[in-house]
Length: 211
Length: 214
Ligand SMILES: Nc1ncnc2c1ncn2[C@@H]1O[C@H](COP(=O)(O)OP(=O)(O)O)[C@@H](O)[C@H]1O
Ligand SMILES: [Mg+2]
Image 1: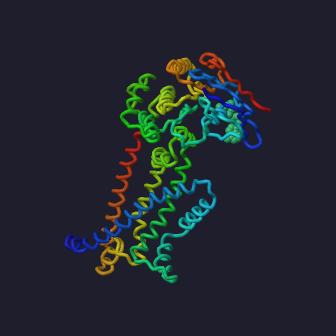
Image 2: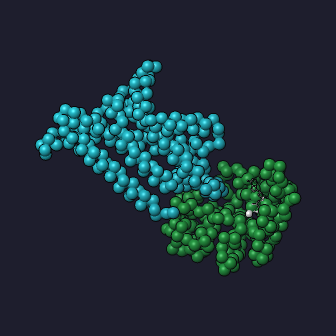
Image 3: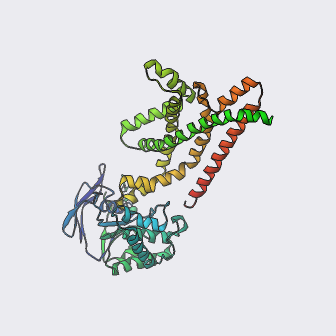
């Protein structure tokens, strides 16, 4: 269970998130919805440690943690960015194995085995040695998901997972997210697409624009 | 004529050796140093970028010939004495590091911020991120500009002539003055052409290898 307590985030004097508290239960999908500019990405960036917060505390299973603490190798949060941000100079397999081998010092053979397992689970078998530019948008997204999963995070976060895909692929992403839930993955999905949120989420958190 | 060429060739080749030695050592030192300067130039710590910008400005804003003369003939006045070869290496490395630094700065700046963030959430350290993700991308971006400088360096190396080092140009010039014939200078030209041709081919091969990803 992830608990966020009294999170406030300001850019300069502008308050983007004001005293927000929320709880994400294990094996559940939490959708964070709201109009464009409401601060959804900012909230996600706070949770993933890419932005520091002005006030607020994070608890994982009741233990306080600091998302911006990059020395903690046991990752709690995994992220799939809106534009995926795969590393263009590395193959699919290279993208996936880089962090587990370099950060967690896991043996390459184990990491590769797990990577192949995840790839085939997401319908990407045979793509191991391709470079990102050789993949479609949907495939890139799935590689980004596998790359995040390879670090064995406790929670997987997505920023607007449907925004860069053509509408036909929306259901496919929803299916992936629901499949991962079956594998007991806790997930946070940021989206402005209310229909999509209703499709996948167990719980919906509204984010409103602060005047 | 063949006989004359055979006669002067050893001198020209020994000059070529000097030219190549300056060429290789300058590249081997200046490219990594340039990458470091480029990395320094994108840091937020103002005194560092200010200092590095000043250095780059001086090195790129004055002739390399002046820098060579300054190091070899100027510095002894304040009791800093270099051997000829060391003076040449010092001036060349300092000068080319500045050019490469500026090229690398542009390269580092063109790597999207999202790549750093992506690496950060995967818990890669700054060093790992630079080595595994940023440098390979920067290398590909800067390769054409580095290539231009490499070709320039082949020709710039002839400037060491002014501090009395026996490079290729000097060898040709000595022979021409002594034997009153253009042939040595033409041979010198041909050797420079061959050297730049080899560089061009090697650069093309590296570029081709880099093209496996985009
Ligand atoms: N680094 C930043 N500095 C200043 N303002 C920012 C920064 N990042 C986002 N904002 C502002 O915060 C607000 C919320 O942005 P964002 O979280 O991206 O919204 P959403 O993802 O819901 O569309 C926007 O008005 C945006 O301009
Ligand atoms: Mg957003």
